[in-house]
Amino acid sequence: MFQINENFTKLAKSYLFVEIANRIAKYTEANPDKKIIRLGIGDVTRPLPAAVVEAMKKAADEMGREETFRGYGPEQGYGFLRDAIVAHDYQGRGIAISADEIFVSDGSKCDTGNIGDILSANNSVAVCDPVYPVYVDTSVMGGRGGNPVGGGWSNILSMPCREENGFLPELPQKPVDLIYLCFPNNPTGAVIHTAELKKWVDYALANGSLILYDAAYEAFITEADVPHSIYEIEGAKKCAIEFRSFSKTAGFTGTRCAFTVVPKELECGGVSLNALWDRRQSTKSNGVSYVVQRGAEAVYSPAGQEEVKKNLDYYRQNARVIFDGLKSAGFTVYGGVNSPYIWLKTPNDMKSWDFFDQLLEQVQVVGTPGSGFGPCGEGFFRLTAFGSAENTREAVERIVHRFG
Ligand code: MLT
Image 1 (tube, rainbow, N blue to C red):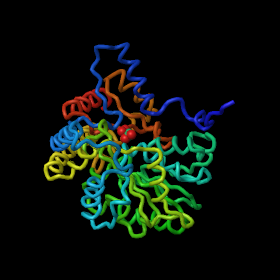
Image 2: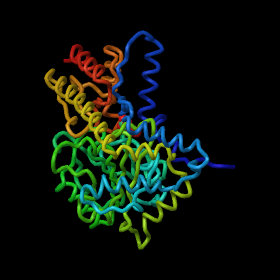
Image 3: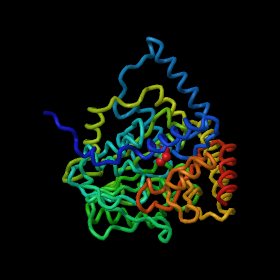
Image 4: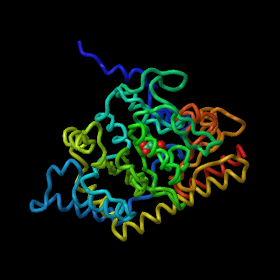
């Protein structure tokens, strides 16, 4: 008789954002006339830059003509996009990464989960707490979680990130094989400075650890001395894989395009991780569509860059509206400066999910309960700056009016 992957049965019944969507659906069914403002999942609302849309239309036309039609593309991504990524995101910052170290994909969520395919189930894992739940759930799916214990997992080291340490994790006391880091951080909006990130790279090199570095929010960095890529740190190419995405940078949450950097210097016992990931991707994926990759390429055009900047500024302004509005009403707030996420303390030490329910029922604003990101998120709440300016202002007014 066939057997299932038992690890799946250890997980919570639904993924965090599915649970939130279910609660909204239930509320909407009972209250069809109420206008809900959604600042929960980090989903963008600004339309794609016109330069991206034009490039995709042109590519779609090419697909409709015999002379320019394309079938399967390279599994790793088209050369034109990999070259543009290298030129703008790496060489442009003085980082020596080559095109064959870039793997284009349909999302960083997928890649941070799929990367487990090339890593042994015997690896120990460390994650921040609070944490983007994908790292934990996919580690459990891949047999690296052990069993649930006290809100965590027996084989996953949770690194508490609290107010008192600026929401930064401390280096583990003992060697850990795989370390997930995300900066600017989802959910707290915290950033890591160059000297601090260097400590992690040094730790990984000294202990034979692999850092899985999620930099999906790097475009929101505004301050100096905050690395956009882990490869700004010397030695990182020997110990880190980096995940980057067009989702939040250029509005691709629904269009889907991202990339993962696996440096050729990265080896384990003489085996190249770049070769393993290449083998994995070319076997299990046919890449991202030509039309979408042409759209992603256009993000780097002068017109694309200008529009991307406008959209990022728009979200930054929303972040300020939330941050300042809540702060002046007496809330304790974090993040929002180099990040689209505002991390706030719930009023009157309310439990995160209780605050979620009260916000939904009393003022029809949706956010994400901090405890959904891990035990250290209890008593916190995340709001995103990705809404429309109008809805963002209205949401803050509603929250302040009722809870300020
Ligand atoms: C979030 O809200 O944390 C993100 O939108 C999730 C994601 O990017 O998958």
